[in-house]
Length: 104
Image (cartoon, rainbow, N blue to C red; front, side, top):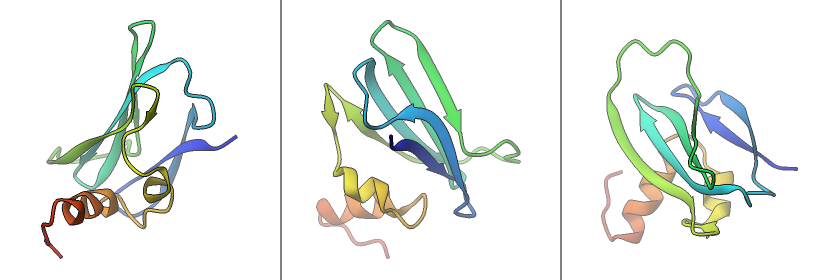
C-alpha cells in the first residue's frame, strides 16, 4: 500500500491516509502548492471533498501553482514524476519543461 505523501516547504514528508494503490472511490486529486507547502484536495465520487495539508503553521498563503494528479480514473501526470519528486516545486518544473518553458 503506497500512501499519498505531501511535502512541505522544507522538504519534510507528510503522509496522508490516501492509498495510491486504490483510488476507486476518488474522482479527482488536485495538488496545490501554497508558499512551498503541498495541499491535496480530494474530490470523492460521492460528492464529498477532503483536504490534506503538509503544513500546520503557515504564516502567509502565497499561491504558487496547482496541478491535477488523478482524474477520470487515471494519473493525469506521470506517477513516477510525482513519487520521485525532490521538493514541492519539482512537478511544476517538470510541467514547464513539457511545455517548452525553462525557468531554472
